[in-house]
Length: 576
Image (cartoon, rainbow, N blue to C red; front, side, top):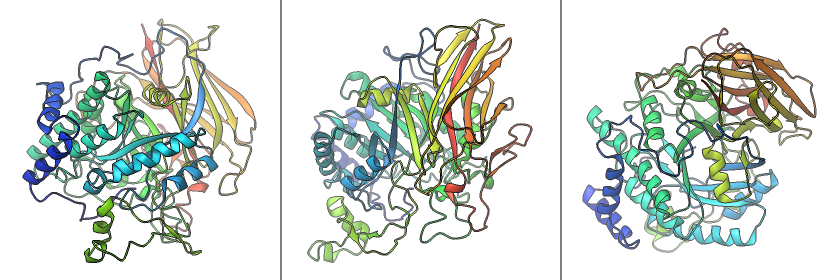
C-alpha cells in the first residue's frame, strides 16, 4: 500500500533540491557530485539493458549458488520486508506494536520501510526511528529488525530497500533517499519518452550505486525488491529487466503478492475492491502494452507473478535470477480499533493546514489512541496473513539477505502450509540435491527427480480456518536465453507440467516427479492452492488448468481467507 497524495513534498525547484541534498551529504563526508559521479561511473556507456560487469565476489550470474555443490542445511525463518510505522506519513503504529504483532504471528525477521519523504530524511524521522530500532535490537533476541526505506523508483513504483545493520546504515539510507528518490527529485510521471528514458537511467544508476556501497564495504549488504509492480501499470517489463541487470546482486526480485490483502473486507470495503488495492486503470505514464485486466490481482498475487507463461516466466526463461516475496505492507490493520493520535495544540502544528505538513515537522505521527470502534484499514499484521519463508544457513542479518539473494524463499497466504522443502537432483543420486533458487547442471539424457516435502498446517489461522492444501503444481519451461524484446510479456512454452492432488493429506509427506531423458535446459517453479477459487489461468486451461482468478463484484469475492495460495521460487536445470 502506498500513497497517491498530491502533497508529497515535491521540491519547488531543482536548485532547492540540490542545495538540500548537498547540505545533508556534506554531513556524511561526501557530496552529491561525488555520489552522482560514482553512479555514472558504474554504468559507464553501457546500453540500458546490458548487465554490469560481474563483481569479484559474485557467486553466479544465473540462479543462486548450487551448481557445483550440494545444498547446505537450512533453517527456515519467516520474514516481512515491507512494514510501516508512525514514521511514515500514512501509517499509525509504533515500532513496538509492529514488533509485538510480528512475534505473535511467528515472524522471525522484519524490515521497517518508511516512505521516502523530506520529513523522513531531514526532519528526524530516519535518525529517530533508527534510535528506536537500535534499542529494540538490544532488548529483543527473538526477532531480527532491519531498517530500510520504501524508495520511489524514478518513473516507476516504489521498492523495498534493506541494509544489514551497521554504523553506516542510516547514513546510506538517507543518502540514497535524498539523491536517488524519484518523488523527492521530481522524477515522477514523465511527460515524454525522452524524459522517461532519462529517469529510467537514474533508477539503474541508483541500484548500481547501492551495489558499490556493498562492494566497497561501506555497508555489509543490501537488497532491493520491486513493490506491487502492476498496481499502477507503470513498471514496464523493460524496466524490471533493466533494474535486475543494473546489479543482479542488489535488485533481486519483486513482491509476488502485494500487501493490503484485506482491502475488500475492511471497515470501508465495498463491491469491486481488489486485494492489494489494485483498483486502478491506465494513466498517461502507464506502460501502453498492459491491458486493464492485468491491473488486477489473481488469487491475491500480482498479475506479473500469477500468470503462468507471463512476465515473471519470461524473465526466468532468460536463465537469470529474479525472485518473489510476499509481505504485509502494514499501515492500517483491518478493523483495528486504534485511531491516529492527536498532534500537539502548539506551534508550529496549529499554523499548519494539512495532516501531512504536521507529520513532516518531525517525520512522525503521534502515538495511536484506542477507541473501541473498528477503524478503516486494508492490511494485516506482519505474519498474520502473508509470509515470506527464507532458508538461512545461520540466524543473522547477512544470512537473511543472502538467502533472499540466492532465491531460497517461498511465500504463502493464510498460513496455507507450515513447511516446504524442494530438492532437485539426478534420479538415483545419493546426495540431497539443490533447492529453491539454485541451479544444477546435468548431462543430456539424464532422468531428473524433483521431490517436494510438504508439512501441512495443523492449527487454525487468524480467520479460524485450518488450511487445506488441495493441489500442488510444478510449473516450468525451457531456458531460451536473453529476449530480443526487453518488453517481452510471454514465455509461450511455459506451462503447468504436473499436478499433485493433495486434498485431505495431513502431516509431512513427500511428492516426487521424474523428468525423463532431459534434453534441454529448463526451469521449474512451484505453486499450490486451497482449491476454493481456481480455474483456467490467464492464458487458458491448456497452459494453466486451475490457476488463480481475478475477483468480481460479488460479496465475499475479495475475502482473502477464502482463496489462499503458496508460491515457491525456481530451480534452474542446465543440460550440457
